[in-house]
Image: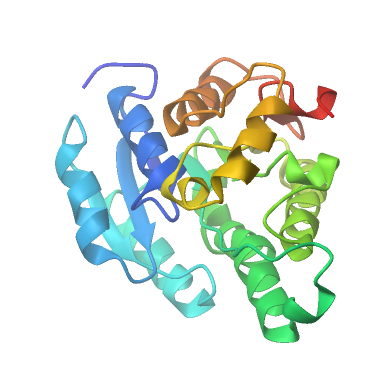
Length: 250
């Protein structure tokens, strides 16, 4: 396929649903060969691959919490595609816990959020960093959230994990320059299966607090990721908000 990403190879972690699946579609439509990773959702990941435009796409089981599987993924890409141009660090995990219920946010839950959302993103960069730096260099897009700034999210640990992602984005941007650019996109609430399961009153309150009066779609986030890759070639270490003006709300 022709397009601004023709000939390029992209990895989208956690790409079996939601933002990850939408991003895989957007990058494939722009001409990229897309590798979708998943932890334990092979059927859903393969369903995504089957709908992508173009050819050469594939799904790979590789948990971001398993560094050995990420090293194997990097070796596989080097042998199969021979290059990597884009890494979208989308994989993440959370569950809804009221911010005032400190006892419910136990050590196991807190650690799992941090291990997946923060350490997992770093482990992906570490695994494929040399591939991204080869040739003309590459781009990393990390998934942050407006929760890093408004301090409202599924739980306190989730907010902290996204603040850490933004700090790490800027640190990696400096460390990996000039060969690799590193940016983040920070959606507000996105209309996914996860947020559709919220109490309707919570959803309504968040829409009311968003100046544009609606949630983002996964496709809008995917389009923002594509724009950051293609249209901002002289930008690194930046955070792109896709939040409907949520920080301006009350």
